[in-house]
Amino acid sequence: MTSSALSGPASTVPLRGGVDIPVLGLGVFRAPAGRETRQAVTAALDAGYRHIDTAAVYGNEADVGQALRDTKVARDEVFVTTKLWNADHGYRQTLDAFERSRRLLQVDHVDLYLVHWPVAGPRLETWRAMEHLLGTGKVRAIGVSNYMSRHLEELLEHAEQPPAVNQIELSPYNWASRAGTVDLCRGNGIQVEAYSPLTKGRKLADPPLVAVADAHGRSTAQVLIRWALQHGLVVLPKSTRSERIAANADVFGFTLTDAEMTALDALDENLVTGWDPTTAP
Image (cartoon, rainbow, N blue to C red; front, side):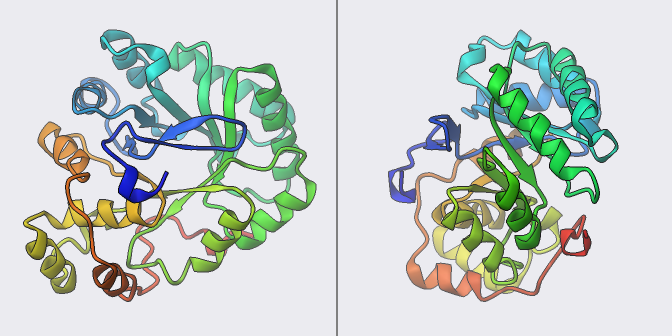
């Protein structure tokens, strides 16, 4: 599906293995465990999101699961992602960690399970466990997060089942710097997901970005999300405020021009707002 064919937050693109993933997801990184996370997930589902992205290390899997049970949206309509944390690498450790996450979420399957970080040492053993989980049907798709080109090349050399997804930090402010990783993913059928697409707020007042937003009568956050969609990315903006969650989904009624996309791409400054996986061995 091209960006022009996307009609709303529940629009999907296909992953390896025949699984469809919604192009817009709610990220719950640093969403406090408890009512705040539950309310954010509920607000997202009410706004039309059908994709929730959590992780073991976030400490809020149980609250995501509770919100899924409380909503009137059917479980099979919501795409749920969680992630394996660094301390749980290794074959048996991965299987055990997955079961902990599944129990906290209280789901019979997870739609996408990701290796959160390219931990040195046992990461190939970890991937064997990920492949096993895929074979059991408890996971519909497997992938990685924070994998740069060298990590992907190592994995692709040894994997029986290549990753369906690579989730990395992407925005106009590091797009050119990470083009090699994006190209490697696309050349190997790996869907790229963009986390921290809003730069954790650092660039929302940047004049070139503001100029594009003003031209469309949109917020700079909406422009950043639209930019990601038009680059064919699955995008994961994070918010716990219902009005912002709704606004972040209202990005399907306008299109950035080719010139605007080019101008935004040129804003690259190798910005990293969190972890820098280029330093991972």
